[in-house]
Length: 311
Ligand SMILES: [Mg+2]
Image (cartoon, rainbow, N blue to C red; front, top):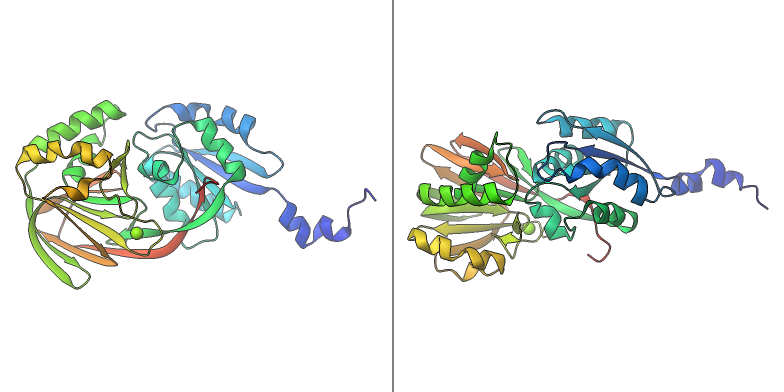
């Protein structure tokens, strides 16, 4: 009776029992350098009966998306982004609207999405989590057709991301220093914001279009944001004396930013923003400057993500 049933050998069961194929897409320049140990960690901690795997290393910006597309074409079922929110953004862009599942091994500086999903900051723990993780469908955002998974921001946080661009110094300290600098430098700009059918005209320090709640490092700009409710959480930090923004920083760590007088928040499916001149923007931490109308649209449950079992 040790011979396997022919159906097990070639048929449906064989298909179901066959190990799933994972491709790890590694950003060797990600914030923490922890990803240097990814091979060793996967060899040691991944369940080799359940999974077959390979590694692909990115060489330039945009490469993670290309590598993820290749892996998809080759039939990989799980594509794991080893990096920060930027790497996750690229891999997710390739995986949206497919059956494939995004995995995350956080190795960036902030790791806003990974932290919210319950991944820690430990590479070995994240790899072990893959063995028992479950799959969850989450929403994705589009800004003028460009996808984002966690957060889009216009204003102060967009300026911080633009300051971080091209800098090789990553981690909390440079983010902190640039945030202070940007906080002193950035002046609230007049914006016309259409939130579904509501129109708001306001001077804003930050407009956050949130799918997930967290910038990273446990700073929550949109504590009520849910990844799977088919809606954006739109958070406005309106004009206020500068010291009030600085004084509100602890509130962002406690999930209490909505209690500040200068904060308003909304839920919406569609958001349109018109500002005069160029805006500082970030999509999942990637800084850019754009002029003209910004059009945000949510794609409900467009992406499958591996989440830790307890979620
Ligand atoms: Mg939502």
